[in-house]
Amino acid sequence: MELKQIEIPPTSTSTSISSPVKHKKSDYSFSENTPNSNALPLLLYLTNAIFFAAVYFLLVSWRDKIRHSKPLHVVSSSEMAALLAFAASFVYLLGFFNPLQEQQELESLQEEEEKQKITDLKKKLENDVPDQHVTLAAIKSSDLMSDDDEEIVKGVAEGRIPSYSLESKLGDCKRAAAIRRKALERITGKSLDGLPLESFDYESILGQCCEMPVGYVQIPVGIAGPLLLDGEEYSVPMATTEGCLVASTNRGCKAIYASGGATSVVLKDGMTRAPVVRFSTAKRAAQLKLFLEDPLSFETIAAAFNKSSRFASLQTIKCAIAGKNLYMRFTCSTGDAMGMNMVSKGVQNVLDFLQTTDFPDMDIIGISGNFCSDKKPAAVNWIEGRGKSVVCEAIIKEDVVNKVLKTDVASLVELNMLKNLTGSAMAGALGGFNAHAANIVSAVYIATGQDPAQNIESSHCITMMEAVNEGKDLHISVTMPSIEVGTVGGGTQLASQAACLNLLGVKGASKEVPGANSRRLATVVAGAVLAGELSLMSAIAAGQLVKSHMKYNRSSSNKP
Ligand code: ADP
Image (cartoon, rainbow, N blue to C red; front, side, top):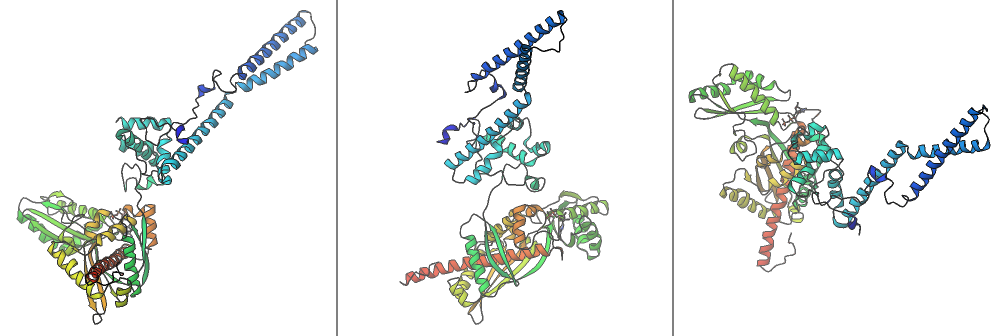
Protein backbone atom coordinates (compact mmCIF):
# COMPACT_ATOMS: atom_id res chain seq x y z
CA MET A 1 0.00 0.00 0.00
CA GLU A 2 2.81 2.37 0.98
CA LEU A 3 4.71 1.41 -2.14
CA LYS A 4 2.25 3.40 -4.23
CA GLN A 5 3.64 6.59 -2.74
CA ILE A 6 7.13 5.70 -3.87
CA GLU A 7 8.29 6.70 -7.32
CA ILE A 8 11.52 5.19 -8.60
CA PRO A 9 13.15 7.54 -11.08
CA PRO A 10 14.61 5.70 -14.07
CA THR A 11 18.16 7.02 -13.53
CA SER A 12 18.24 6.09 -9.88
CA THR A 13 18.67 2.81 -8.06
CA SER A 14 15.63 0.80 -7.19
CA THR A 15 15.93 2.13 -3.67
CA SER A 16 15.75 5.77 -4.65
CA ILE A 17 12.47 7.42 -3.96
CA SER A 18 10.70 10.58 -4.84
CA SER A 19 9.06 11.85 -1.71
CA PRO A 20 5.36 12.62 -1.85
CA VAL A 21 6.02 15.82 0.15
CA LYS A 22 7.66 18.33 -2.16
CA HIS A 23 8.19 21.90 -0.91
CA LYS A 24 10.29 24.63 -2.40
CA LYS A 25 10.62 28.25 -1.39
CA SER A 26 8.31 29.25 -4.25
CA ASP A 27 5.70 26.88 -2.87
CA TYR A 28 4.76 29.51 -0.32
CA SER A 29 3.39 31.90 -2.97
CA PHE A 30 -0.22 32.98 -2.52
CA SER A 31 -1.33 31.21 -5.62
CA GLU A 32 -0.72 27.79 -4.19
CA ASN A 33 -3.85 25.78 -3.79
CA THR A 34 -3.51 24.80 -0.15
CA PRO A 35 -6.42 24.78 2.33
CA ASN A 36 -5.43 28.24 3.74
CA SER A 37 -4.44 29.84 0.49
CA ASN A 38 -7.87 31.51 -0.14
CA ALA A 39 -8.27 33.04 3.32
CA LEU A 40 -4.75 34.40 3.46
CA PRO A 41 -4.89 37.12 0.72
CA LEU A 42 -8.27 38.46 1.95
CA LEU A 43 -6.94 39.09 5.44
CA LEU A 44 -3.83 40.64 3.99
CA TYR A 45 -5.76 43.03 1.72
CA LEU A 46 -7.94 44.06 4.65
CA THR A 47 -4.97 44.75 6.91
CA ASN A 48 -3.25 46.68 4.13
CA ALA A 49 -6.37 48.79 3.65
CA ILE A 50 -6.64 49.49 7.40
CA PHE A 51 -2.95 50.42 7.55
CA PHE A 52 -3.09 52.88 4.64
CA ALA A 53 -6.49 54.30 5.72
CA ALA A 54 -5.15 54.98 9.23
CA VAL A 55 -1.99 56.63 7.84
CA TYR A 56 -4.06 58.76 5.42
CA PHE A 57 -6.52 59.82 8.15
CA LEU A 58 -3.73 60.76 10.60
CA LEU A 59 -1.81 62.78 7.95
CA VAL A 60 -4.94 64.72 6.90
CA SER A 61 -5.93 65.34 10.52
CA TRP A 62 -2.40 66.57 11.48
CA ARG A 63 -2.23 68.81 8.34
CA ASP A 64 -5.55 70.53 9.41
CA LYS A 65 -4.25 71.00 12.95
CA ILE A 66 -1.05 72.64 11.66
CA ARG A 67 -3.06 74.92 9.32
CA HIS A 68 -5.39 76.04 12.13
CA SER A 69 -2.59 76.30 14.72
CA LYS A 70 -4.12 73.65 16.95
CA PRO A 71 -1.75 71.67 19.33
CA LEU A 72 -0.71 68.30 17.84
CA HIS A 73 -0.52 66.48 21.19
CA VAL A 74 -4.22 66.92 21.91
CA VAL A 75 -5.58 63.69 20.39
CA SER A 76 -9.25 63.28 19.50
CA SER A 77 -11.04 59.92 19.90
CA SER A 78 -11.09 59.36 16.09
CA GLU A 79 -7.33 60.04 15.95
CA MET A 80 -6.81 57.60 18.87
CA ALA A 81 -8.78 54.92 16.95
CA ALA A 82 -6.71 55.61 13.81
CA LEU A 83 -3.45 55.33 15.80
CA LEU A 84 -4.53 51.98 17.26
CA ALA A 85 -5.55 50.69 13.81
CA PHE A 86 -2.17 51.84 12.42
CA ALA A 87 -0.17 50.07 15.19
CA ALA A 88 -2.18 46.84 14.94
CA SER A 89 -1.97 46.58 11.15
CA PHE A 90 1.75 47.49 11.21
CA VAL A 91 2.55 44.68 13.69
CA TYR A 92 0.54 42.18 11.62
CA LEU A 93 2.24 43.13 8.36
CA LEU A 94 5.70 43.03 9.99
CA GLY A 95 5.05 39.49 11.23
CA PHE A 96 3.73 38.37 7.88
CA PHE A 97 6.73 39.53 5.89
CA ASN A 98 9.35 38.49 8.51
CA PRO A 99 11.99 36.56 6.46
CA LEU A 100 13.44 34.78 9.53
CA GLN A 101 10.12 33.22 10.35
CA GLU A 102 9.72 32.14 6.75
CA GLN A 103 13.15 30.55 6.82
CA GLN A 104 12.31 28.67 10.02
CA GLU A 105 9.09 27.41 8.52
CA LEU A 106 10.97 26.31 5.43
CA GLU A 107 13.58 24.45 7.48
CA SER A 108 11.03 22.65 9.58
CA LEU A 109 9.20 21.60 6.42
CA GLN A 110 12.44 20.37 4.90
CA GLU A 111 13.08 18.38 8.08
CA GLU A 112 9.64 16.89 7.76
CA GLU A 113 10.42 16.05 4.17
CA GLU A 114 13.65 14.19 5.17
CA LYS A 115 11.78 12.31 7.89
CA GLN A 116 9.11 11.40 5.41
CA LYS A 117 11.77 10.12 2.99
CA ILE A 118 13.30 7.87 5.66
CA THR A 119 9.88 6.61 6.75
CA ASP A 120 9.03 5.79 3.15
CA LEU A 121 12.32 3.99 2.68
CA LYS A 122 11.78 1.95 5.83
CA LYS A 123 8.24 1.08 4.75
CA LYS A 124 9.50 0.05 1.34
CA LEU A 125 12.19 -2.14 2.86
CA GLU A 126 9.78 -3.75 5.28
CA ASN A 127 7.56 -4.59 2.37
CA ASP A 128 9.92 -5.99 -0.19
CA VAL A 129 13.36 -6.76 1.30
CA PRO A 130 13.83 -9.54 3.84
CA ASP A 131 17.16 -8.30 5.22
CA GLN A 132 16.09 -4.88 6.34
CA HIS A 133 19.27 -4.04 8.23
CA VAL A 134 21.53 -4.60 5.27
CA THR A 135 19.46 -2.68 2.77
CA LEU A 136 18.77 0.22 5.09
CA ALA A 137 22.49 0.50 5.61
CA ALA A 138 23.02 0.39 1.89
CA ILE A 139 20.49 3.11 1.18
CA LYS A 140 20.69 5.87 3.73
CA SER A 141 23.73 7.77 2.55
CA SER A 142 23.56 7.12 -1.13
CA ASP A 143 19.94 8.13 -1.53
CA LEU A 144 19.70 11.14 0.74
CA MET A 145 22.26 13.21 -1.08
CA SER A 146 22.56 16.95 -0.82
CA ASP A 147 22.52 19.08 -3.95
CA ASP A 148 26.30 19.54 -3.64
CA ASP A 149 26.88 15.78 -3.49
CA GLU A 150 24.53 15.26 -6.40
CA GLU A 151 26.72 17.63 -8.46
CA ILE A 152 29.83 15.63 -7.51
CA VAL A 153 28.08 12.35 -8.38
CA LYS A 154 27.34 13.80 -11.80
CA GLY A 155 30.98 14.90 -12.17
CA VAL A 156 32.27 11.40 -11.35
CA ALA A 157 29.70 9.69 -13.56
CA GLU A 158 30.58 11.99 -16.48
CA GLY A 159 34.32 11.49 -15.94
CA ARG A 160 35.03 15.11 -15.00
CA ILE A 161 36.06 14.20 -11.44
CA PRO A 162 38.40 11.20 -10.98
CA SER A 163 36.81 8.70 -8.61
CA TYR A 164 40.14 8.05 -6.86
CA SER A 165 40.49 11.72 -5.90
CA LEU A 166 37.25 11.93 -3.88
CA GLU A 167 38.81 11.21 -0.48
CA SER A 168 41.52 13.84 -0.84
CA LYS A 169 39.19 16.42 -2.42
CA LEU A 170 36.35 16.04 0.11
CA GLY A 171 38.40 15.24 3.21
CA ASP A 172 35.57 12.94 4.27
CA CYS A 173 36.08 9.24 3.49
CA LYS A 174 32.51 8.16 4.24
CA ARG A 175 31.06 10.86 1.99
CA ALA A 176 33.56 9.94 -0.73
CA ALA A 177 32.48 6.29 -0.58
CA ALA A 178 28.78 7.23 -0.76
CA ILE A 179 29.34 9.49 -3.77
CA ARG A 180 31.53 6.94 -5.57
CA ARG A 181 28.92 4.29 -4.96
CA LYS A 182 26.11 6.42 -6.34
CA ALA A 183 28.18 7.32 -9.40
CA LEU A 184 29.00 3.66 -9.95
CA GLU A 185 25.34 2.72 -9.80
CA ARG A 186 24.59 5.45 -12.30
CA ILE A 187 27.39 4.45 -14.70
CA THR A 188 26.66 0.74 -14.61
CA GLY A 189 22.90 0.92 -14.20
CA LYS A 190 23.32 -1.77 -11.52
CA SER A 191 22.06 -1.53 -7.98
CA LEU A 192 24.41 -2.05 -5.03
CA ASP A 193 21.56 -2.81 -2.63
CA GLY A 194 22.74 -5.40 -0.15
CA LEU A 195 26.33 -4.16 -0.14
CA PRO A 196 26.32 -2.12 3.07
CA LEU A 197 27.81 1.35 3.24
CA GLU A 198 26.95 2.43 6.77
CA SER A 199 28.60 1.41 10.04
CA PHE A 200 32.11 1.25 8.68
CA ASP A 201 35.12 3.40 9.51
CA TYR A 202 36.33 4.43 6.06
CA GLU A 203 39.11 6.57 7.55
CA SER A 204 40.71 3.42 8.96
CA ILE A 205 41.34 1.89 5.54
CA LEU A 206 42.62 5.04 3.83
CA GLY A 207 46.10 4.56 2.36
CA GLN A 208 46.40 1.22 4.14
CA CYS A 209 43.84 -1.43 3.29
CA CYS A 210 41.61 -0.58 0.33
CA GLU A 211 41.32 2.11 -2.32
CA MET A 212 38.15 3.50 -3.87
CA PRO A 213 35.73 1.81 -1.44
CA VAL A 214 31.98 1.68 -2.17
CA GLY A 215 30.99 -0.46 0.83
CA TYR A 216 32.06 -3.63 2.48
CA VAL A 217 31.29 -7.35 2.26
CA GLN A 218 29.93 -9.08 5.32
CA ILE A 219 31.31 -12.49 6.22
CA PRO A 220 29.93 -14.35 9.21
CA VAL A 221 32.37 -15.20 11.98
CA GLY A 222 31.90 -18.49 13.82
CA ILE A 223 33.79 -19.71 16.87
CA ALA A 224 35.49 -23.06 17.18
CA GLY A 225 36.75 -24.11 20.56
CA PRO A 226 37.88 -24.11 23.17
CA LEU A 227 41.08 -25.20 21.53
CA LEU A 228 43.34 -26.44 24.32
CA LEU A 229 46.83 -25.65 23.07
CA ASP A 230 50.02 -25.50 25.12
CA GLY A 231 47.92 -25.37 28.29
CA GLU A 232 45.84 -22.35 27.14
CA GLU A 233 42.25 -22.30 25.94
CA TYR A 234 41.47 -20.39 22.76
CA SER A 235 38.16 -19.53 21.14
CA VAL A 236 39.13 -19.53 17.48
CA PRO A 237 37.32 -17.00 15.22
CA MET A 238 36.66 -18.28 11.70
CA ALA A 239 35.22 -16.05 8.97
CA THR A 240 33.62 -18.29 6.40
CA THR A 241 30.57 -18.95 4.29
CA GLU A 242 31.30 -22.65 4.01
CA GLY A 243 28.71 -24.59 5.97
CA CYS A 244 29.99 -27.25 8.40
CA LEU A 245 33.54 -25.85 8.49
CA VAL A 246 33.25 -24.26 11.93
CA ALA A 247 31.18 -27.16 13.27
CA SER A 248 33.75 -29.65 12.01
CA THR A 249 36.71 -27.73 13.47
CA ASN A 250 34.77 -27.41 16.70
CA ARG A 251 34.40 -31.18 16.84
CA GLY A 252 38.15 -31.56 16.34
CA CYS A 253 38.75 -29.09 19.20
CA LYS A 254 36.44 -31.15 21.39
CA ALA A 255 38.41 -34.33 20.65
CA ILE A 256 41.71 -32.57 21.38
CA TYR A 257 40.33 -31.11 24.61
CA ALA A 258 39.00 -34.47 25.79
CA SER A 259 42.43 -35.99 25.13
CA GLY A 260 44.35 -33.44 27.21
CA GLY A 261 45.17 -30.80 24.59
CA ALA A 262 47.67 -30.17 21.81
CA THR A 263 51.26 -28.97 21.91
CA SER A 264 53.04 -26.72 19.42
CA VAL A 265 56.55 -25.54 18.66
CA VAL A 266 57.61 -22.59 16.48
CA LEU A 267 60.62 -23.94 14.60
CA LYS A 268 61.53 -20.79 12.66
CA ASP A 269 60.32 -17.20 12.42
CA GLY A 270 61.53 -15.19 9.45
CA MET A 271 59.95 -13.33 6.56
CA THR A 272 61.72 -13.42 3.20
CA ARG A 273 62.22 -11.23 0.15
CA ALA A 274 64.42 -12.13 -2.83
CA PRO A 275 65.35 -9.43 -5.35
CA VAL A 276 66.72 -10.33 -8.77
CA VAL A 277 69.84 -8.56 -10.03
CA ARG A 278 71.81 -8.95 -13.26
CA PHE A 279 75.48 -8.60 -14.17
CA SER A 280 77.26 -8.63 -17.49
CA THR A 281 78.83 -12.01 -16.68
CA ALA A 282 77.88 -15.07 -14.64
CA LYS A 283 81.26 -14.71 -12.92
CA ARG A 284 80.28 -11.32 -11.46
CA ALA A 285 76.97 -12.75 -10.28
CA ALA A 286 78.86 -15.59 -8.59
CA GLN A 287 81.22 -13.08 -6.92
CA LEU A 288 78.27 -11.36 -5.29
CA LYS A 289 76.80 -14.72 -4.23
CA LEU A 290 80.07 -15.66 -2.54
CA PHE A 291 80.32 -12.26 -0.88
CA LEU A 292 76.75 -12.42 0.48
CA GLU A 293 77.12 -15.98 1.77
CA ASP A 294 80.52 -15.38 3.39
CA PRO A 295 80.01 -15.29 7.19
CA LEU A 296 82.58 -12.47 7.36
CA SER A 297 80.30 -10.20 5.29
CA PHE A 298 77.19 -10.83 7.39
CA GLU A 299 77.71 -8.11 9.98
CA THR A 300 78.16 -5.37 7.36
CA ILE A 301 75.16 -6.48 5.36
CA ALA A 302 72.99 -6.87 8.47
CA ALA A 303 73.91 -3.33 9.60
CA ALA A 304 72.63 -1.98 6.27
CA PHE A 305 69.55 -4.21 6.30
CA ASN A 306 68.44 -3.51 9.89
CA LYS A 307 68.65 0.28 9.81
CA SER A 308 65.10 0.88 8.53
CA SER A 309 63.25 -0.70 11.48
CA ARG A 310 64.04 -1.55 15.09
CA PHE A 311 62.01 -4.77 14.60
CA ALA A 312 63.83 -5.95 11.46
CA SER A 313 66.74 -8.24 12.14
CA LEU A 314 68.51 -10.02 9.29
CA GLN A 315 68.88 -13.78 9.85
CA THR A 316 70.19 -15.38 6.65
CA ILE A 317 70.85 -14.78 2.95
CA LYS A 318 70.54 -17.67 0.51
CA CYS A 319 71.39 -17.16 -3.14
CA ALA A 320 70.50 -18.94 -6.37
CA ILE A 321 72.12 -18.22 -9.74
CA ALA A 322 70.59 -18.50 -13.20
CA GLY A 323 73.36 -17.54 -15.64
CA LYS A 324 74.22 -13.87 -15.15
CA ASN A 325 71.23 -13.38 -12.86
CA LEU A 326 71.35 -13.63 -9.10
CA TYR A 327 68.43 -14.23 -6.72
CA MET A 328 69.19 -13.30 -3.09
CA ARG A 329 66.71 -14.65 -0.54
CA PHE A 330 66.94 -12.46 2.56
CA THR A 331 65.26 -13.80 5.72
CA CYS A 332 64.62 -11.56 8.72
CA SER A 333 62.61 -11.50 11.91
CA THR A 334 59.90 -8.85 11.88
CA GLY A 335 58.53 -8.66 15.43
CA ASP A 336 54.74 -8.89 15.48
CA ALA A 337 54.35 -7.69 11.88
CA MET A 338 53.83 -10.21 9.11
CA GLY A 339 56.76 -8.28 7.74
CA MET A 340 56.56 -7.88 3.97
CA ASN A 341 57.02 -4.10 4.12
CA MET A 342 59.75 -4.37 6.68
CA VAL A 343 61.80 -6.94 4.78
CA SER A 344 61.38 -5.05 1.51
CA LYS A 345 62.78 -1.87 3.07
CA GLY A 346 65.74 -3.80 4.48
CA VAL A 347 66.44 -5.39 1.09
CA GLN A 348 66.38 -1.98 -0.60
CA ASN A 349 68.95 -0.73 1.94
CA VAL A 350 71.27 -3.64 1.10
CA LEU A 351 70.89 -3.13 -2.66
CA ASP A 352 71.76 0.56 -2.25
CA PHE A 353 74.77 -0.40 -0.13
CA LEU A 354 76.04 -2.97 -2.67
CA GLN A 355 75.68 -0.58 -5.58
CA THR A 356 77.54 2.21 -3.82
CA THR A 357 80.38 -0.07 -2.67
CA ASP A 358 81.81 -3.11 -4.51
CA PHE A 359 79.06 -3.85 -7.03
CA PRO A 360 78.27 -0.64 -8.98
CA ASP A 361 77.82 -2.80 -12.12
CA MET A 362 74.88 -4.60 -10.50
CA ASP A 363 71.68 -4.03 -12.45
CA ILE A 364 68.63 -4.24 -10.17
CA ILE A 365 65.88 -5.93 -12.17
CA GLY A 366 63.27 -6.20 -9.42
CA ILE A 367 62.99 -5.92 -5.64
CA SER A 368 61.08 -9.23 -5.82
CA GLY A 369 62.38 -11.95 -8.11
CA ASN A 370 59.87 -14.66 -7.06
CA PHE A 371 62.51 -16.66 -5.19
CA CYS A 372 60.90 -15.19 -2.01
CA SER A 373 58.24 -16.65 -2.76
CA ASP A 374 55.10 -14.67 -1.96
CA LYS A 375 51.55 -15.87 -2.72
CA LYS A 376 52.57 -18.59 -5.15
CA PRO A 377 53.06 -22.29 -4.56
CA ALA A 378 56.85 -22.81 -4.42
CA ALA A 379 59.11 -25.55 -3.12
CA VAL A 380 61.44 -22.98 -1.57
CA ASN A 381 58.81 -22.10 1.06
CA TRP A 382 57.91 -25.74 1.62
CA ILE A 383 61.56 -26.66 2.21
CA GLU A 384 63.07 -23.52 3.75
CA GLY A 385 59.99 -22.08 5.42
CA ARG A 386 58.57 -18.55 5.26
CA GLY A 387 57.03 -16.62 8.13
CA LYS A 388 56.48 -18.99 11.02
CA SER A 389 57.34 -22.69 10.70
CA VAL A 390 55.20 -24.57 13.20
CA VAL A 391 54.68 -28.17 14.21
CA CYS A 392 51.64 -29.07 16.31
CA GLU A 393 50.72 -32.48 17.76
CA ALA A 394 48.22 -34.28 19.99
CA ILE A 395 47.53 -37.81 21.18
CA ILE A 396 43.83 -38.58 20.79
CA LYS A 397 42.65 -41.32 23.11
CA GLU A 398 41.01 -44.40 21.70
CA ASP A 399 37.62 -43.77 23.34
CA VAL A 400 37.60 -40.17 22.07
CA VAL A 401 38.31 -41.43 18.55
CA ASN A 402 35.39 -43.83 18.93
CA LYS A 403 32.88 -41.62 20.76
CA VAL A 404 33.60 -38.06 19.56
CA LEU A 405 35.04 -38.76 16.13
CA LYS A 406 32.91 -41.86 15.49
CA THR A 407 35.71 -43.86 13.89
CA ASP A 408 38.71 -45.95 14.94
CA VAL A 409 42.45 -45.39 15.05
CA ALA A 410 43.38 -48.00 12.42
CA SER A 411 40.95 -46.51 9.87
CA LEU A 412 42.34 -43.04 10.42
CA VAL A 413 45.97 -44.13 10.09
CA GLU A 414 45.23 -46.05 6.92
CA LEU A 415 43.21 -43.23 5.38
CA ASN A 416 45.94 -40.71 6.18
CA MET A 417 48.58 -42.87 4.55
CA LEU A 418 46.57 -43.47 1.39
CA LYS A 419 45.00 -40.04 1.04
CA ASN A 420 47.24 -37.36 2.55
CA LEU A 421 50.56 -39.03 1.80
CA THR A 422 50.26 -41.44 -1.12
CA GLY A 423 47.35 -39.71 -2.82
CA SER A 424 49.04 -36.31 -2.66
CA ALA A 425 52.30 -37.85 -3.90
CA MET A 426 50.41 -39.33 -6.85
CA ALA A 427 48.98 -35.88 -7.56
CA GLY A 428 52.45 -34.30 -7.46
CA ALA A 429 51.35 -32.07 -4.59
CA LEU A 430 53.54 -29.22 -3.35
CA GLY A 431 52.94 -28.86 0.39
CA GLY A 432 49.47 -30.32 -0.02
CA PHE A 433 49.83 -33.42 2.14
CA ASN A 434 46.72 -32.70 4.14
CA ALA A 435 42.93 -32.93 3.95
CA HIS A 436 41.84 -29.27 4.09
CA ALA A 437 44.37 -27.06 5.92
CA ALA A 438 43.53 -24.19 3.53
CA ASN A 439 39.93 -24.12 4.80
CA ILE A 440 40.96 -23.35 8.35
CA VAL A 441 43.88 -21.10 7.42
CA SER A 442 41.71 -18.91 5.17
CA ALA A 443 38.87 -18.62 7.68
CA VAL A 444 41.19 -17.61 10.54
CA TYR A 445 43.16 -15.28 8.25
CA ILE A 446 40.04 -13.40 7.14
CA ALA A 447 38.75 -13.11 10.71
CA THR A 448 42.04 -11.79 12.07
CA GLY A 449 43.00 -9.36 9.29
CA GLN A 450 45.78 -11.41 7.66
CA ASP A 451 46.49 -11.28 3.95
CA PRO A 452 44.17 -13.99 2.58
CA ALA A 453 46.28 -14.36 -0.60
CA GLN A 454 49.06 -15.75 1.58
CA ASN A 455 46.89 -18.77 2.36
CA ILE A 456 48.68 -20.36 -0.63
CA GLU A 457 51.96 -21.02 1.17
CA SER A 458 50.49 -20.69 4.67
CA SER A 459 48.35 -23.76 3.96
CA HIS A 460 51.34 -25.92 3.13
CA CYS A 461 50.93 -28.74 5.60
CA ILE A 462 51.80 -32.37 6.07
CA THR A 463 49.42 -34.26 8.32
CA MET A 464 50.85 -37.37 9.96
CA MET A 465 48.90 -40.03 11.86
CA GLU A 466 50.25 -42.98 13.76
CA ALA A 467 48.87 -45.51 16.19
CA VAL A 468 50.62 -45.21 19.58
CA ASN A 469 50.31 -46.69 23.07
CA GLU A 470 50.24 -50.23 21.74
CA GLY A 471 48.10 -49.24 18.83
CA LYS A 472 45.21 -47.96 20.98
CA ASP A 473 45.59 -44.17 20.68
CA LEU A 474 46.17 -41.85 17.73
CA HIS A 475 49.19 -39.55 17.40
CA ILE A 476 48.35 -36.76 14.96
CA SER A 477 50.58 -33.89 13.89
CA VAL A 478 50.50 -31.05 11.40
CA THR A 479 53.75 -29.53 10.17
CA MET A 480 53.32 -26.15 8.53
CA PRO A 481 56.53 -24.45 7.36
CA SER A 482 55.16 -21.13 6.09
CA ILE A 483 52.47 -19.59 8.28
CA GLU A 484 52.60 -15.87 7.43
CA VAL A 485 50.80 -13.92 10.12
CA GLY A 486 51.10 -10.64 11.99
CA THR A 487 49.24 -8.87 14.79
CA VAL A 488 50.25 -5.33 13.76
CA GLY A 489 50.01 -3.60 10.37
CA GLY A 490 47.81 -4.38 7.38
CA GLY A 491 44.23 -5.36 8.13
CA THR A 492 44.93 -6.25 11.76
CA GLN A 493 44.14 -2.75 13.05
CA LEU A 494 40.60 -2.66 11.58
CA ALA A 495 37.92 -2.80 14.26
CA SER A 496 36.37 -6.21 13.57
CA GLN A 497 39.65 -7.95 12.83
CA ALA A 498 41.23 -6.40 15.94
CA ALA A 499 38.28 -7.72 17.98
CA CYS A 500 39.02 -11.26 16.76
CA LEU A 501 42.72 -10.88 17.61
CA ASN A 502 41.69 -9.58 21.01
CA LEU A 503 39.53 -12.66 21.55
CA LEU A 504 42.66 -14.76 21.05
CA GLY A 505 44.66 -12.50 23.37
CA VAL A 506 47.11 -11.50 20.61
CA LYS A 507 45.93 -8.05 19.58
CA GLY A 508 48.68 -5.61 18.55
CA ALA A 509 52.33 -5.67 19.53
CA SER A 510 53.43 -7.93 22.36
CA LYS A 511 54.42 -5.90 25.41
CA GLU A 512 56.77 -8.58 26.70
CA VAL A 513 58.72 -9.85 23.67
CA PRO A 514 58.39 -8.40 20.14
CA GLY A 515 57.01 -11.17 17.97
CA ALA A 516 55.41 -13.19 20.78
CA ASN A 517 51.86 -12.30 19.70
CA SER A 518 52.36 -13.17 16.04
CA ARG A 519 54.09 -16.44 16.95
CA ARG A 520 51.23 -17.33 19.27
CA LEU A 521 48.75 -16.58 16.49
CA ALA A 522 50.72 -18.92 14.19
CA THR A 523 50.47 -21.73 16.75
CA VAL A 524 46.71 -21.13 17.06
CA VAL A 525 46.41 -21.42 13.27
CA ALA A 526 48.32 -24.73 13.38
CA GLY A 527 46.22 -25.94 16.35
CA ALA A 528 42.99 -25.12 14.53
CA VAL A 529 44.30 -26.93 11.43
CA LEU A 530 45.08 -29.95 13.62
CA ALA A 531 41.47 -29.90 14.84
CA GLY A 532 40.14 -29.50 11.29
CA GLU A 533 42.25 -32.36 9.96
CA LEU A 534 41.18 -34.65 12.77
CA SER A 535 37.50 -33.98 12.22
CA LEU A 536 37.38 -34.17 8.42
CA MET A 537 39.58 -37.25 8.24
CA SER A 538 37.33 -38.90 10.83
CA ALA A 539 34.23 -38.01 8.83
CA ILE A 540 35.74 -39.54 5.70
CA ALA A 541 36.92 -42.63 7.61
CA ALA A 542 33.52 -42.99 9.27
CA GLY A 543 31.82 -42.63 5.90
CA GLN A 544 33.89 -45.50 4.64
CA LEU A 545 32.97 -47.51 7.72
CA VAL A 546 29.29 -46.87 7.12
CA LYS A 547 29.64 -48.10 3.55
CA SER A 548 31.35 -51.29 4.65
CA HIS A 549 28.72 -51.78 7.34
CA MET A 550 26.00 -51.46 4.75
CA LYS A 551 27.85 -53.81 2.45
CA TYR A 552 27.81 -56.46 5.12
CA ASN A 553 24.17 -55.70 5.93
CA ARG A 554 24.82 -54.07 9.29
CA SER A 555 23.33 -50.99 10.91
CA SER A 556 24.02 -47.61 9.35
CA SER A 557 22.96 -45.73 12.49
CA ASN A 558 26.48 -44.37 13.10
CA LYS A 559 26.48 -42.45 9.86
CA PRO A 560 28.14 -39.05 10.61
P1 ADP B 1 54.27 -5.43 7.33
O1 ADP B 1 55.76 -5.30 7.36
O2 ADP B 1 53.75 -6.70 7.88
O3 ADP B 1 53.71 -5.14 5.97
P2 ADP B 1 53.70 -2.85 8.39
O4 ADP B 1 54.97 -2.30 7.82
O5 ADP B 1 52.41 -2.34 7.88
O6 ADP B 1 53.67 -4.44 8.34
O7 ADP B 1 53.66 -2.72 9.99
C1 ADP B 1 54.71 -2.80 10.77
C2 ADP B 1 54.80 -1.45 11.48
O8 ADP B 1 54.43 -1.64 12.84
C3 ADP B 1 56.20 -0.93 11.44
O9 ADP B 1 56.13 0.46 11.20
C4 ADP B 1 56.71 -1.19 12.85
O10 ADP B 1 57.64 -0.22 13.25
C5 ADP B 1 55.45 -1.11 13.69
N1 ADP B 1 55.49 -1.93 14.92
C6 ADP B 1 55.12 -1.53 16.15
N2 ADP B 1 55.27 -2.52 17.05
C7 ADP B 1 55.75 -3.59 16.37
C8 ADP B 1 56.10 -4.92 16.75
N3 ADP B 1 56.02 -5.37 18.00
N4 ADP B 1 56.55 -5.73 15.79
C9 ADP B 1 56.65 -5.31 14.51
N5 ADP B 1 56.34 -4.08 14.10
C10 ADP B 1 55.90 -3.20 15.02
